[in-house]
Length: 335
Image (tube, one colour):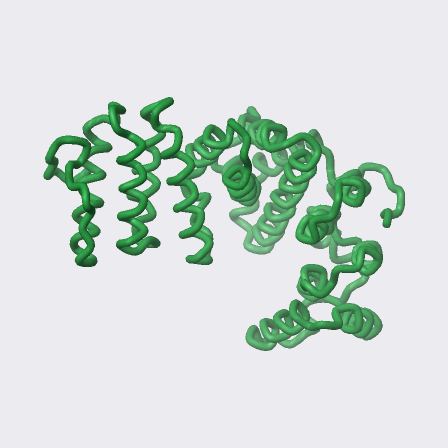
């Protein structure tokens, strides 16, 4: 399966009105304005066992909206490469979404590479972000323009993630990290813009680093966290809990090499403690303390550990077997 040959695309589809005119789909307003109906339709399209039947029906009736295309594309029952190619080529959906779908199917690099060529280059993306940042103030004054700005923000993040995904498969997690870092250190752009543009890529990189066995795993996890502490504020509570537990385990395993790792681990735990129950908190604290024996973590970290232990005691009857608190008894709460 190969997409039609074309040169590296310009960033035309970042303009919402331009995208509407190039995609053979009807205007969103032609459908019912009832949000519950929209949600039911999305759920139906994303779960039907016959996604191509619905695709053909909606396309022939002129009711194929962007929401419908995305719901059908990421339907778990759509697993034929030919069907994916048909939807992608007929709707001109950006290649980054096709890559995301192929990754879900664990497709080999040879199937992803042709679509990767259709993703805007890193240089083009950086140029767009620079232009995007310079026009931000004007967008915020115009609600309609702001909506287009937000749409383009999502698109850029997906394109950056496509680059990271491809290079992870091709060269490993460090290669993906280096590309991500290149966007983070881009000069001449406001920090808030760079954080916003890398929100989705940062979460993706964090999750991939936590799964990897690379020696640089902990360093990458730490770098992503220090770049954006809100990166794990995902809406799904179960996903966020898993991320927090994995981050604590990863950072705690490095405590003998650098005392900053348990300090950051404790900070992650403190800022996200409402997601964890008493048993989770106890497990994390025990892990941090066990791996920090003989490590000078600093008074503030010890204070935070003591504070979290008291939190556990307040929300349940659970008490840690070892109440030594790094060999000293601390009563002050963290600042």
